[in-house]
Length: 67
Image 1 (cartoon, rainbow, N blue to C red):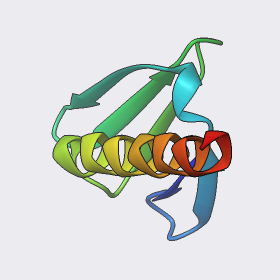
Image 2: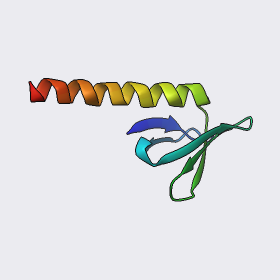
Image 3: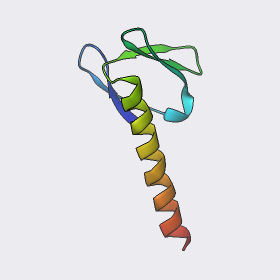
Image 4: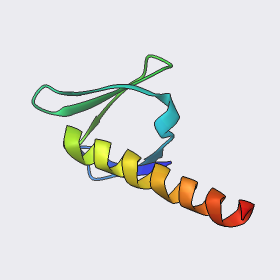
């Protein structure tokens, strides 16, 4: 799960598996698989980097516990 910031400054945690699209219009809009749209302060590239970092952490943890 990744932490992002809504336009009002509220931090929320989003399950990255449910993100369908990330658009910059110019605000960044996450469209979830449920159809919900969330407008956030982070850029599209920041969201991509957050997801990559989270998944690297998960794979690294799994590799350590399996070995």
